[in-house]
Amino acid sequence: MSIRPIEAVVFDYGGVISSPLFRGIGEFESAQGYPTGSVLELVFGDASYVGVEGRDHLTDAEVDPHHHHVDHDWHRLEVGAMSVREWFEGVQRRAPEVLGTEIDMDAYVHFMATMPVGVHWCVVHAARDLRTQGVALGLLTNNVAEWGENWRSTFPVDELFDVVVDSSAVRLRKPDRRIYLLTCERLEVDPEACVFVDDNVANCASARSLGMETVLFGEDPFAAVDELHDILGRRGTTTRA
Image (tube, rainbow, N blue to C red; front, side, top):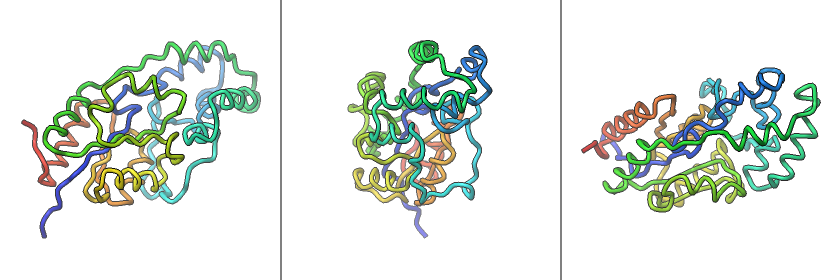
């Protein structure tokens, strides 16, 4: 039986192209005297939000790829059903129940403004190399409409990617299977001919349920790039120069 080559690679943005997002929020909680994990629960609806300390460790069996996963204000923000202003209002309204006290919004906004966001340039260079070798590239990100100009300014998005699928624009978010199918449709490839690179366990599990190969991005970006090349080599697509 012949091995089907990989035709496209789809990358996440936050925690894959960029350095992990919201890193240091645990220190913010401690400094403010909030219970451990409470700010993550308040802001994102998940105490182990992608890109921060304590990434989740779900198994494929624990992930429901058919769940649409829009059950918190953060999710609504990411699918364009809520503005950033409305989201902040919700954070303040729910804070006493989740934190046990009101949230110091000035301190939180300062934390957000000073949060370092870097770029994993080894991933960007790997993507550029793949593009020169004829591999189609997609970017699939759960993101916020009002922040689009900021994250797009961090690296050459349009130069690298044939397709960019932003959750806030298409009104779907990972790990909903429909957003992966939409990305593959726009790339004009079957899921079985794609590799998906993400730092969230549930997002990778959902992609695998559609037949996509996956790379779960960890602390070492170079290790993730190596794993990607190993998959491509195994599938007979490309090897590093």
